[in-house]
Image (cartoon, rainbow, N blue to C red; front, top):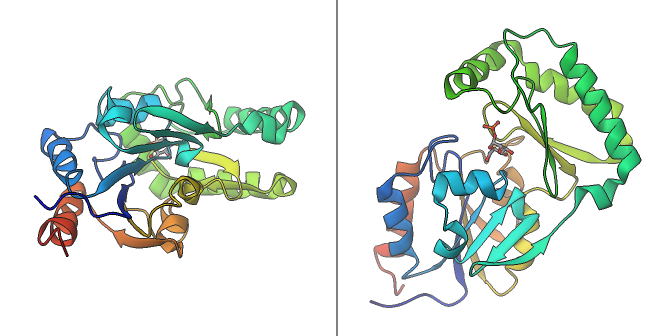
Length: 250
Ligand code: M1P
């Protein structure tokens, strides 16, 4: 075994890249990631908070990978230890935050969609996650909402209203999953995690939403990364085998 190539890190988005959207990673994928760690430093960067990433990649996720960046890296772990957090509350202040939350809840209250459940805004460390149907819908309801949204553009319409109303706050609105969107200050997208990776000369990023407007776009395009677009977890494995395992000492 050639061992790890110095200065190289393979960094993965979660939903759609290591797992099917909001699903648990397969045992094969988890095993493959550990194989990969023998030849490269491995990190994951998800828009979700740590509890959701743990549901998908396992309870010991922060120990199973060299770096885990939840909330785009606004909450960062290295070798199982917390190395940084960013606070939306401190950044915006209570008044602006309240103004945004109040307006958003009013908007959702007036929204006529087939069903609504609970937890319309999830308050995270570095971002808000807003869901018109409510986060605690069932898997079936989540799948139905995604289909409905594709036809009726509930989220895109809501984003454009919020963008206009809160233009002065310089926020980014990012649709990364099926039922919600993330709200955070400009620059707090997935490129945020790169500030922890200054020691790496070769950062390979793998993501499925690398197109403009997708939540992997900025990090995929970043000059600091070599970006790879994948369409499924299976393709992620294939691309990694070809890049890192075919001739690991290359
Ligand atoms: O990782 C992508 C997104 O996953 C979830 O989205 P949804 O619940 O809409 O499928 C959320 O955790 C979201 O924050 C995240 O960006």
